[in-house]
Amino acid sequence: MKAISYARYGGPDVLEYGEADDPKLGPDDVLVEVRAVSVNPVDWKARQGHLDAVLPAVFPVIPGWDLAGVVVRPGPAVPEFAEGDEVIGYVREDVLSAGTCAELVAAPVRTLAPKPRRLSFEEAAGIPLAGLTAYQVLHRALGVRRGETVLVHAAAGGVGSVAVQLAAHLGARVIGTASERNHDFVRGLGAEPVSYGEGMAERVRGLAPEGVDAVFDTVGGDALKASANLVVPEGRLASIVDAGVTGYGGAYWFVRPDPADLRKLSELADQGVLKIHVEETFPLERTADAHRRSEEGHVRGKIVVTVPTSSPSGV
View 1 (cartoon, rainbow, N blue to C red):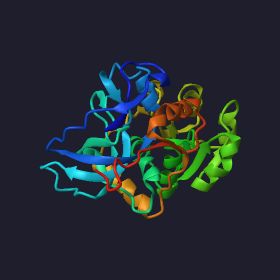
View 2 (tube, helix red, strand yellow; view 1 turned 180 degrees about the vertical axis):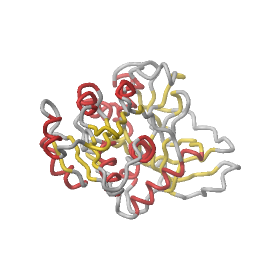
View 3 (cartoon, helix red, strand yellow; view 1 turned 30 degrees about the vertical axis):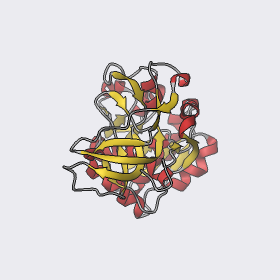
View 4 (cartoon, rainbow, N blue to C red; view 1 turned 120 degrees about the vertical axis):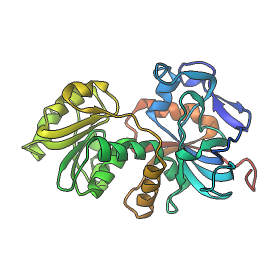
């Protein structure tokens, strides 16, 4: 099969397009023909070696954790899926090795859910990591309830844009930080936009003078520090990027695969509650360019890598 891989940590130039061994199918795995892969910041951070302490690399590494594709064959212990089923997955292993930027992936069944019927493969590929992160933080770390006010940082980004929609669906009032160019986009998602940067806290106070009930931090640093002062006394704070949140009495969250959560997200997409904005797509052989675009930041929604079928009739 064709795949992207890297044999050492480094910049986008270490990514190579070429032949790789077809994956072996275990009893609890599902062989998936990949159609699209979402690029997340964690992908290039892993490629740079920043996750080595918790996810060591077994080189060569195929990058990517998100996928949308079609089932080629389920393993013998997998009755949940059949050949031809369309699926999405957050396919994360305990090491960096066999990722999703490839024509074929042997995905553990615990990482998969049915693909939303109303979304394209490109849109659906943007759900798994971003969607699971947003869903788990809102429901488990923050416990957001109807009528509460939630502040979401980087509300136009991959995780933030999903978090805004899910929080609004829960019945919360949502305030989202974003650049001026993204204010209309964030407003369309269901949030009241405010500009980030200097004076952000004062702008949020202008909308919520008594403070906010919960903060979903995707930025860290100064934004996290400012956010800690915006939370009401009984409020909650969670970050997905800055472990220093625990020093403010908040929770640090690292997303995990969960097929029930992923299935719920797929259902919400089919109900029209959750939409995924794809800002730009790149073919598989240009995955390095997709990483470069992601590293530039200020992405509205998702960057997606598309994977052509290996033959007119599939695998």
